[in-house]
Structures are given as structure tokens and as C-alpha cells.
Amino acid sequence: MGNGAIVANEHPAPHGVNGATSAIGITTHGSNWYFAVTAVMIVSTFAFIGLSFTRPRSHRIFHYITAAITLVAAIAYFTMGSDLGQTPIEVEFKRSNPKVSGTATNQNLMIVTGLVGALVQSKYKWAYFTFGCAAFLWVVWTLAFTARKHAIGLGADVSRTYLTCGVWTMFLWFLYPIAWGLSEGGNVIAPDSEAVYYGVLDLMAKPVFGALLLWGHRNIDPARLGLHIRDYDDDPATTSGTHAGHHGEKRALGDSAVANGDTTTAPGTTMNV
Image (cartoon, rainbow, N blue to C red; front, side):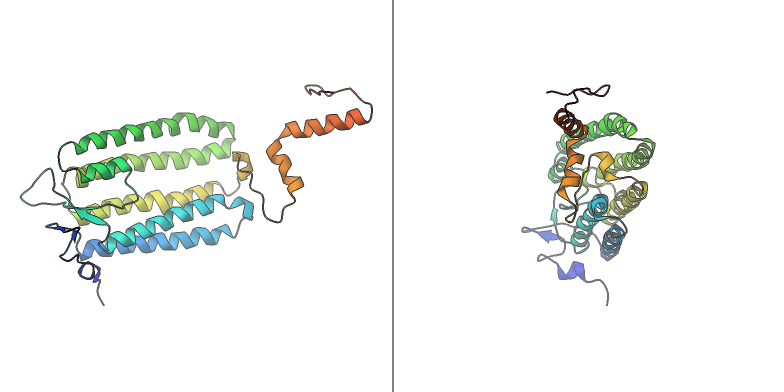
């Protein structure tokens, strides 16, 4: 049985919604590709959840995050493969061989400005594109400088993992605006080509990134990153001190010394009596 998603979800005409239709949209080939990416995202989700059981429960935070990312992506790609969640728009650049006239409005990879820009028919869409790029450059600046300095301060292994994942992510993120300009923005490539472009980027930015992240964190205690997670069967008395830090330990030592009549403090320790 072949892929009948596009025919099954005609609204009421192919690639139509809200009373409007588009001349073109994804074909069965594009739908097949979207469903293939959906399958990879689902397998990745189960893989990340399965790998979490190899770690203590208090060390599974990154497994849960990566699994959530791929799960959301799986739902989005299933929706797009079903030819749902799109809306027809008039293109700014009309071509003798039109490429793009339907925009997948719930693609999880587009930020709000990209979505709004894709729905604008005139050249003003590029203003939203510019706003999105400006926000993106701010994120890149933060990742490349401020956050990197924090990672360096946490140790060589944390810094190495951050550098690997950070460089990979920023490289891919620079390709997303190009994809937008060639598809929703400039109407240059066909919807099936757009599907392949975004699909490859998302596979690299979600399952592959998740694998790199989990591999890099395999020997890193989340507590070193400030993620103090108490398991349900842990003794609160033994874990609450982790949040309080060394100040609580010094306070306890000081109180004990006072009780024993010893007012001498260790070098570098301040005790209020």
C-alpha cells in the first residue's frame, strides 16, 4: 500500500486550507521523506530513553532533554508528512516555474520571526528575517564567548564537550537562514527540495547532536554543572548540604567548636559567635 497521506488530507482540494489552495506543494516523494525523518526521530527518542537506564536517575537530565527534542521533532515531521499544518500564501517572487506556495507553519525549526516572515507576501518579510538573524547572532555571541568561559571554568572535560557540541550547533544554525532564504523567503527551491534541506539539517541538529551531547557527558556529574538532582529515595539530610555549599559546612563546624569551648578558627574561616 502506497503513501496516500496527501490525497487523504485534501482540504478539500490538494494543498488547500482555510478556503485557499496553492498551485503546488510537497509530492508523495516529499511526504515519504518527511515520514522517514519522523521514523529516525522516533527511534532516536527511544534510544535516548533507553540509554538513560544505564545511568543513575539523578544523572539522566540530558537524556530526557534530548529525547524530548526528538519527540517534538517527530510529531512535527509526521504533521508535515501528512500534508497538514501548512497554509497557502502568495509568493513575493513569481517565477515561470513556481517553487514554493505552501508553508509548513508548524515546523519546529523556525523561530517566530521566520514564521511571520514566511506568511508575509511582500518584501517586508525580509525585515522579519533580519530580526531573526539579529537574535541568532546574539545567541552565537553568547555561546562563543560568555558560555564558553563558564565551560572552561568547570574543567577540561566539560570545556571539550561544550566546544564539540557548540561548534557543531553553530555551524548548523548558520545553514538554517540560508534554507529559509531559498525556500520560504526567495521561492527558489521546490517544496520537496525544501523538505530534504530542512530534514538533513534537523537530523544533524537533533539526533546527531543528542548523541554527541550524551557521549561527552558520559563521565560528567551533572552536579558539577550546578544541576543538583535528588533521587526520590535519597536522604534529604545528605543532599541538602550540596545546595547549601561549603558555607553550611563551615557554619556547622563553627557551632560545634563553640559548644566545646574552642574559639580558634581554621585559616581562611570566618566564624560568627
